[in-house]
Length: 91
Image (tube, rainbow, N blue to C red; front, side, top):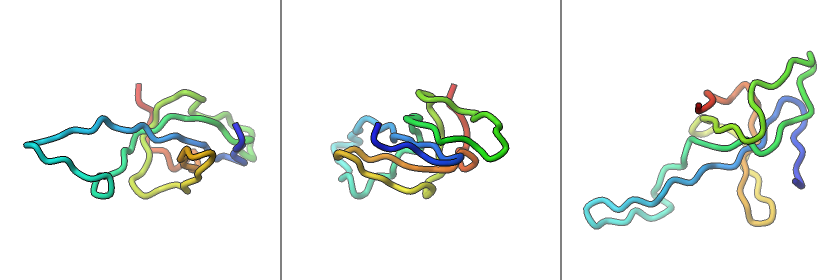
């Protein structure tokens, strides 16, 4: 991985939803809402108080609709967010 998050940040890759056609209408990518589900790709260096992360690499999580910083590496889009901004872990 070329990106190593710092501090309590988490690097995520958005989980793309399958394209659905309803009533014969295909919705263009620009009009679709982005998925709020993502997979944890990498963890930061840790919090200042040395508490462990609640998530681990490979976990599927929910992220806020407009949160995080988008990062593009080698044509792949990632999202960099603080762990506290994650909404939950998908079991």
